[in-house]
Every structure is written in C-alpha cells, then in structure tokens.
Amino acid sequence: MTAYTRSLPRSGRLFAQQARGAHRDHPLWFLIPALAVLVVFFVIPTLYNFIYAFTNWSSFKSEIGFVGFDNFVSLATNGSLQNAIRVTLIYAILVAIFQNTFGLALALLLERDTRINRAVRTAFFVPVIMSALAVGYIFQALLKPEGALNGILSTVTGSQVSIAWLGDTTWTIVIVALIHAWKWMGLSMLIYLAGLKTISAEVTEAAKIDGAGYWETFARIRFPLLAPAVTFNVATALLGSMNGFDIVQATTEGGPGGTTELLNIFIFRTFGQGLFAQATP
Amino acid sequence: MSTIRSARGSVGRLAQPVAAIVVALLLLGIPFWLVLITASKNQAEAFTPNLQLPEHWQLTDNLVTVFTDGRMVSAFFGSLLVMVPSVAGVLILGSMASWVLARRATRLMAFVYALAISGIVLPPAVVTIVLLLRQLGLAGTAIGMIAVYMGMYLSTVIFFVTGFVRTIPIELEEAARMDGASPAKVFRKVILPLLVPVLATATILICLYIWNDVFYALFVIGGRIDTLPLNLFQVASAGLYLQNWHLIFAYIILMSLPLLITFVIAQRWIISGITSGAVK
Image 1 (cartoon, rainbow over the protein chains, first blue to last red):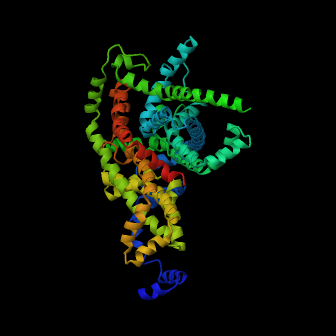
Image 2 (image 1 turned 30 degrees about the vertical axis):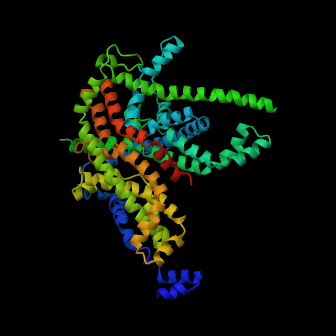
C-alpha cells in the first residue's frame, strides 16, 4: 500500500490520500474534548437561556421553578432589558470609535523608532494590563464632583469648577466609553504600529515623489493598507465593550437613571447580587 | 518647495518628542500620580482625592494593611489557580480541534465550526451557566470556573487558530506522514510549532481577560475563592472600606504588580507576541 502510493505521481498520491479519507490523518478524538467543553459549558447554557427567555410569556412558569425567574419575567417586560441592550450597543459603538481613533493617533505620533517613543509606547500599554475594575476606580476618583480633574480645572481657570462628570444622563455614557477606550488604546496602538510597519517604504516614497504630503499619503495610501489592523481592532473593541462590566460598575454602577446600564450590569443587578449573597457565608 | 518641506520636517522632528511626552504626562501621568499619591495618604487626607502631596506619607502602612486585610496572598494564588489551567486548556484543546476543523472539509465540520465560533458573538449566558454548575455540583469551585472560562474562550482560540492552520500547506504534514508519523506526532511536531505566533497572541490576550475578570468570577466563585479583582471589588464595595481611597489605591498598586513585573521582564516578547498573530 505504501509502496503503491509512493510510486504514484503527486496528484495521484493526493487523490489516493483523499480516497483513503482524511479521517485517519485528522482523527475525530482531536476534536471531541474541545467540543465536549463547548457543548456543556457554552451551547447548553445558551440554549437554556433562549428557552427561558421565550417561555416568559407562556405557562412554563410552574415547571421551571428556580429562584429569580419571576424577577426575570417582570424585568423583561418592564423595559429595563431593552434599555440595557440599547445602552450596550451605543456604548460598544462609542468605544470602537474612541479606542480606534486614540490608538491610531498614538501609533502615528509614536511611529518613529526613537528611545523616547519606545518608552512612551510601553507606558501606554500599562493600562491594558491593569484590571478594568481598578481603572474604573481611578477614574471615579478623578471625575468625582470634588475630584482631581475638577481640581485641576479650577486651578487652570481660576474659578471653582464642579462638573458632575459621572452624573449626567446624556454625557456620562460618553465619558465612560472614553475611559474604556483609555484602558485599551495601548493595545490598538500596538496593532496599528505593527500594521504601519508592514507597509513598505517604497510605497510611501513613491507617493512622496509624486508630491503627496504627509496627510495625503496617510489618507490615500497608508490608511487603506491598514485594513487588517482596523478589522482586528474594531472587532476586539466591539466584543470587549459588548461584554463590558468592570469599568461601568466601578464608575457609575449603571447610573444616573440607568443611562449607563450595560447588559452585564443589568444581569448583575438582577441576579448577581442575590447569587453572590448566597455564596457568601 | 523642498526647503519648506525639510524645514517642516525638522520642526516636526523637534516637536514630536515634546508632543509624545506631553500626551503621555496628561493621559497617563495624572491618573497614575493620583493613584500613587492617594495611596500614600491617611484616610482623612484621601477622602477627597486630589493631586496634592500628602502631609505625611504612609504608603507602606497602607500597603501592609491591604496586603493582610485584602487577603492578597490567597487572592494571588486564587487568580493563578483559575487562570493557568484555563489558558493551558483552551490552547491545547482549541488548537487540537482547530486542526481537525481546518483540514476536514465536510458539511458537518462546517457546522461544528460555526457552532464553535458562535461564542465570539453570543455573550455567555451567565445565569444559566451558574444554574448548570449548581446541578453539576461545580458552583463555587475552581473546576467550575475553569470550565466556564474554557467554554468562553475556546471560540476565540478556534476562530484564530483554524484560520491560521488553513495557511499551513498540507504538504508539510504529508511529508511527515510519509515517514510514518502518527496523527498525534504530526500535530505535535509539525503543526504545533507553526502555531506559535497565533498561540502567543491568544495566550497574552486570554491571560489578560481571565486575570482581570471580575464579572464571571463574581457569579461563579464569588465569596468562595479569592482572586485579585474579586477582592478589590470587595475592598471597594464593603461598607468598611467605602470611600477609603487610600486603601483602594494601595490595593490597586499591589494587585497590578504581578502583571506589571511580568510585562517589564517579558516586554519585547509580549509585544511581538501580540502583534505577530494579529496583523496577518
């Protein structure tokens, strides 16, 4: 058998291989463990979640008798859930915009490989490795009405400034999204820097010879070539902010008036505190 | 024309380092200074956090207080206990599965792949997961937490690695197979070494997510196992510590140290690790 396949020309050998089936070469037991974990700890809970969500309005209630279900029914129908979903989407879009704008701006500012730039890049990566909860507390202290930022502004302007940065029903979500972007912009910056490095100098030289300025070269040539980095950064920013919890919990806890209540904050407020209380002796 | 441009260039060459330092001082210097300076104050001085120097320094006192009261040691090992097996697990199981998913071109595999990566978009159903863990007797245990993290991040790993495996020419595997290598050996000797860049990216990102996670940890192991972010949450929300900014910030300094030290030591490796798998 082996002698036979070896004597075949390349294409024939490939064909024989396919006929023999990739099954033996890529056995299923490589897939099974991951699939088992996924099915038990992701697929089944997600399906149950949908089932519970859809049985809200039917008479399954007596059958599914676990604590907290009644709460879920009332909250799902009184609009909090819809509000949380809306807030989450707005937050995710704001974060994606801010994080990418800041990341790209930093990458362009720190593009040249100098000693100072390398040090500053490293510094901007520190928030990325910090706990998001810690970042949230830092900014709560900065942005309190009697906090540090208003102190700085008072000194600069010479008059008492006491803006409630985290207490505005319209703008606080923007502030919180800015904090989220602050934490993660170092990661976006790194990805953009790597993307900028992959653009060959010849391309930009050619543009320069044709008389294009810095910004024109960037807008027309370098930015389009950054597409893979943009995709990666927008995707990670969206996913990260859809799952956001820590920063908002540490700064506003969903307030004021539910205007920053992300889905995870909503879930935590509805179920988490109860579960947490039960788990705490 | 060219003189104008070179003049602008030299101004830019001078302005750029200044701009870089000013931006860093404003965006990073102020928050970090606030942390350091507040963590050095006593309760009365720290009550309204500001950027002024403390009248008398008690940074070490505060660090010692949170080190013992915040159960720092058990939190550190609790964080390690859930992070290391989760990350090792998702990387090993994820890359094994990705190899089969990338190489077998059947309709069933396409379905399994779609199911596997749906976790990237669908948020984990945390409430039903906790109910499931209770039925399995895993609620509040490290194994339950590890399983939840694995279920969450397997999708990410499978998504990244399957795409990467597809770029590896199958001829490489076949050469090894001709020499009589078993599938396990082909995977270990041929595929796994080629996956290093993408696995490096995944390792760093998933380590960051799990090490700093507080949301899922609150639901699954809150109150049972200490982790660094969980204890920060308790320190900051417990009535005893409420508005005790000096202790909150002292805790933040201590809890950031392990990753900060790791980052400083392995900086070059981490940065190239993140970027190697991301920009392809």
